[in-house]
Every structure is written in C-alpha cells, then in structure tokens.
Length: 263
Image (tube, rainbow, N blue to C red; front, side, top):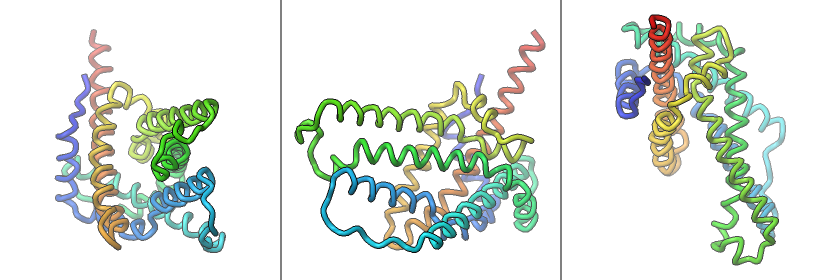
C-alpha cells in the first residue's frame, strides 16, 4: 500500500525548507538563468508565428554563441543545485544538516550522471511545449476554432495527434519525475527506478506537481522579478518534495517486497 499523501508531502517539503533555508541559497544562480522559461517563450513565440503566418519582421536573436553559452551555464547550474539540494534533503530526513559548502562539493560529483535524467527531462519539456503550442495556442490567439477557419479535416486530425503527443509527454515526464533523487541516491541514472516507483502513484504525484505548478504560474506573474522569484522559491521546494516522494515510495516498495517474502 502506497504511503504517498498529497497534502502531507507538500507540507513536509515546506517544513524541510523551513528547517534549512540554505536550500534556497543553492538556487540563487540557477534562478538568474531560467532556461526552461526562456525555452518555452522562444518555442511558443516562433512556432505560433510560423503556424499563424503573421506578417512582420521577427525580432533579432542574440548571437548563437551567446545563446548556447547561456543555456549550457544555466543547465549546469540547475543540475548542480538540484544534486546538492537532494543531498541536503536526505540529511534532513535523517535528522541531520549538511553544510552548504559540503552539499555543493558532494553534489558536484553527482552532476555527470545526473545530466542524463536532466537532459531527458528537458527534452520531454521541450516536446510538451512544442506540441501544446502547435495544437492549441495559435487558435487561442486568433480567437477562433480550426472549424471556423475552414481548416481541412486532415489538418485537424494532425493537430489532435499532436495534442495526444502532449499528453504522452506529460505522462512520461511524470513517471520520470523522481529520476533526479533516484540518480543521486543510487548508482544509476534513476530513470528505471523512477518509472517503477511512480507506478500506481501517477495521479498523486501529478497532483503534487500541479500544486507547485500553480505556485510557479502565480509567482511568475509578479512584474519584473517574477521569473527570478519562481526559480528562487518554487524550484527548491519542488525538488525537496520530489526527494521526499522518492524516499516515501522507496520505503513503501521495500516494505511491500519484505511482506511478500514473509508470505
């Protein structure tokens, strides 16, 4: 029987953050490089323009080397901060505290392996943003439905298929959401472990992620500093919650296996 409780897990994550506020410090630099939000804005804008066919000159892009460096640095800092945060949460769960310097030092050693699930997560995020933009956003902006515009049925079928692709991406991304803590805690990439642990708990984990997603959306609306505050406040509590969920489900799985062996 799963021990995963939605409300208790969210409360536990905030309590751990309260016990060790330095978890927030880890995400100061990554918050300066909001690569996911930047990527989402870029894809949504350019895909919408390409589909709608809006006339006008596209805004100039920063130099490619700068964009590449921006994404590499932001991605690395985010992975490093996540690894250090997961290690700190593990110690908090055991009743200890891991210093900031030690967490960063140990977390740095986990970065090479953690890059694999992080890249997989970013790829799924990109897929979801691209598919959602292609299937929905252009018609929202125009204010009419595909049928009102006389779009051919084959095009509508294609867009429905793209919408299904978004749902598939969402499902897979949720199943793999515990890959980061599994990767840091185990001698693996954590993808298979996450897939197994989330089985039977998908809706509960999705509900937990939805809570933090709503927080992210609200905080991001704050003028000027919203995107930075989202990375600074929501990211640490989210990775804390995912680590708590990982420990809960791993413990539940171990207890279940022991119970089966006793029978």
